[in-house]
Length: 142
Image (cartoon, rainbow, N blue to C red):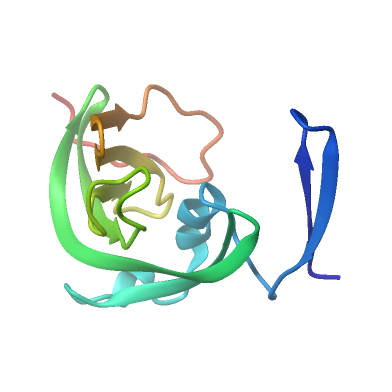
């Protein structure tokens, strides 16, 4: 089928778009990483490319692997993998590499932190809670 239905509630319009197989949106892309077959084999500087649907079009979304680090969270210190998505600069983001995402370096691969330099400031978001994980969340207690 490979179609996306976009509902514009403000203008009361709907539009259907043809998309590629396994296309993702901006949020599902990070969860798509959880099951990517090569994620644990990435070397620093390598990228994963995902077809993403955004602003009524499909484009190649590139996630560059930056490395690994231990990240302090409210649950303890967690080993993480760091990705830097290549984003469009100008409208929202300050530069192409303005967004950084930390995901847990365990079997869950859950997003733990997102930081972005925006055109009008910056934002940082940390995970506040989790439940129903398939695998134990691996942290070193504080």
